[in-house]
Length: 223
Image (cartoon, rainbow, N blue to C red):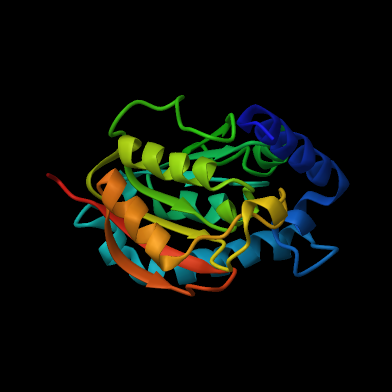
């Protein structure tokens, strides 16, 4: 399947999931989320993923001065909490339906910009415009490794030097021929080391290699 067909399938599938039950497909531990519990779950994850490491992630910057990118925001579950920590949050998703729901939920968050993107790059943003980037429970749904790698390449481009990209992907060794838009292609530790080297990132931390929740913290050095 060509990249164009894969991207079209990603958009179609996630629009359909958003129309059917957006909150469940964003956070599949429950079928029937209340809005309060849904956004509270996002707050808990932001506390664990971002706030406990805020000193490292901010790299000496005041959080309220930082411009942050969230790749794969869905219905805005984590975006809400990110907007309470950082000065400006730009959040993107391949699904227009997810973004429409996020816009309703985050209508009063004046420091949030929400965008539908093409599912493979960050071409809507200029070079070196973000101070931190985050992607959680997103890349694990992408069925082709090259699309994930291109997102990582593009994140390097839009990050300012001396900035962090923290992200999660599928670490279980699922080959592309068996992947789809729910269970995406997997990456090994060796593959991620090669990608980091190839793109100019330094790996600061990893956890969960070989599992569905393979987390990496990539650092873009100043030179």
